[in-house]
Image (cartoon, rainbow, N blue to C red; front, side, top):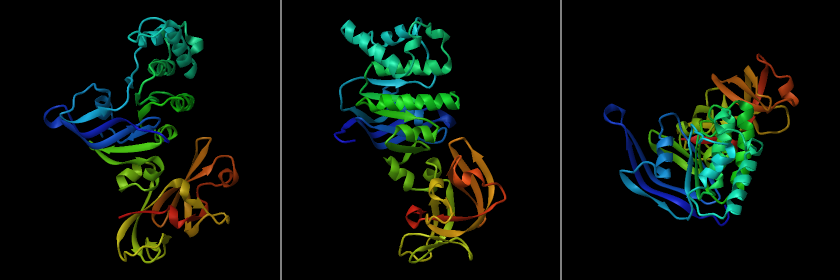
Length: 347
């Protein structure tokens, strides 16, 4: 994010929704949205993701704290359930610009560009009320991008789309985001889509920001097991640290870790599935012992293999259609390996 600057800054934010036993409180001490960057907001249902998005959009008034806009331009939100205006697809995009004093030539240029960005130029004359769910989602994004917002807030942009629709839209959305200097926030339950679009991550839990930071840092070094699971670090193994460089699982199993000086400390060893390897003699890490394959599931791109090892079910990923992925099967015995630098100890 070279040359990036804060577009929207949150300080001491406090929100409350509901009443009585159903009251929900959101507390965010500090959060910055950066120009030219995309923040993925992750968290389980009820964590406060939509509440945060509505506060950033100015739709709900905070009880305390402030949200400071530091750049000129509109703050635009694309809702989870988009609703078309009456009229054609092209009219819908033009209507989004009706409040702006733009020359006709610039307005037409923005409309055409937005329709092209989201591959709905061919639908320009179609009645918007006849669009499919995926087409309507593209229209709502085209309306938002036509405004050339300074801050763009996306609430579950892939909701209710099938796998092919999600794939196509995520690629188009990524290209559109790359072509703008807007600060983007995307709320989605789909970790893979979130990671495709974002360079920063904020994880919400029970109305608080459990962790925020650069995407790769949060993925590799989650602050606790809850965040680890939320960002896809599904292999979490209870261990006891044995200096200088081993984490003991049981009498027969040890995991190599980077040297530390905390004898006897109890921790969790976290290993991302893509960092845990099935050892085929290529020197990809240090062997940690044999396990039995429980399941093999392919989505056509990646193969997720679940292996029973030391009483734990561990996951690893293989590339579909290549090498071991073509032959591995439930019941096979395999040797697992991992590099010490890919082990994250959560104390």
